[in-house]
Length: 125
Image (cartoon, rainbow, N blue to C red):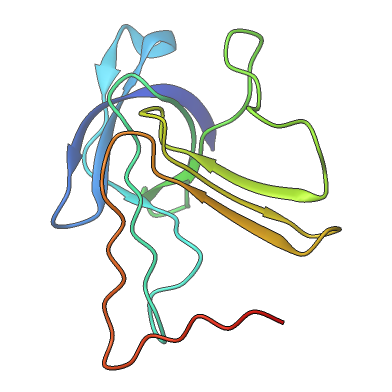
C-alpha cells in the first residue's frame, strides 16, 4: 500500500520517523524506516524535516518505509539542470556538481568549512 503524508516526528538516532496521514483522519503512523542509498559499506545520513511531505509504502506484513519526498507546485527544484547534482541546505550552504563542466562548487553561506585529514593536498591541473 502506498500513502502520502507529512513527517510528524523524527528519531534521529534510529533513523526512523512518524508520518501524519491527513486522509486517515489525521492518524499518525508508528516508526517508519527511512530509505537511504546504502548502509553497509558506507553511510548516508539525511533526515527529513517536520511537515515535509513524503511517500510511504507498507509491505504485506505492515512494515512501513519512507521512500522520500517529492517536488510539488509550492516547492520546486532549486536547480532545473539535468547536468547538475545539487544539495541546498536553506541556510546559504550549497553543494553542487556540474557533470558537464566537471566542476564541484562548495558554498558555505553562513559558517566554516573544515577539511580534516592526515595530509591534505590541493592539486591544480
